[in-house]
Length: 106
Image (cartoon, rainbow, N blue to C red; front, side):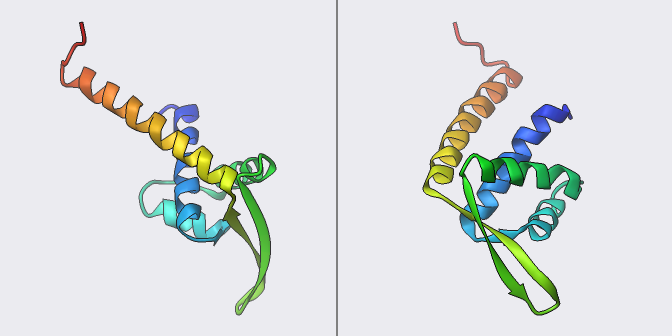
């Protein structure tokens, strides 16, 4: 799969996961890894950028098994951005499916 396309999809997946509940980085990696091969080197730069763009805020939470973990929490700006991405994804996937089925718009 095209690397840039994959990164865009992973970004949307990260947003969707954090919309459901606050999560820490490794937890996000593990959640996505249930579906596809992924590594931390893909996820953490996306998390940093989305936080810089104010789609997430972070906070530290003590862990019972090690150091405190940085959790990501979605902002209202992040919810709006995810909604926009979902709309774009629906439109794009419908277009691709229509073309693959041979449905031509004239």
